Image 1 (cartoon, one colour):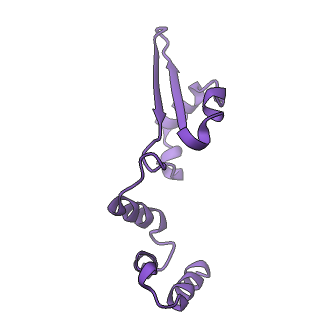
Image 2 (cartoon, one colour):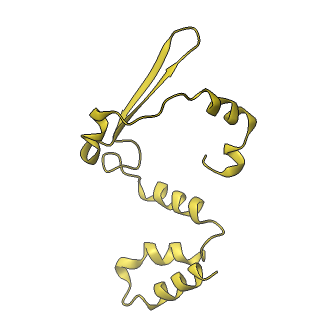
Length: 112
């Protein structure tokens, strides 16, 4: 979603020009640590308002990702950036007798 090729699409650029105000609401700032909420309000040119509020969005401590969802997110976000073996090593970290393999893979991943 936040990839440069998506953000630069003309339809998003046109939408960005219509955004007039972004601010943190005190009610959400005050409770963020334990509620993790947010709200979007869209004022249409017709005068109609559309809003949506979330508390504990997917992936938060209130609605954690399941293991397959977490694995898919990790793969999506690290694809082409880290050694593919890293995911396997991380998922088996609880059973590892030592972490030298993980450390070596991390070094390879961060050093290109």
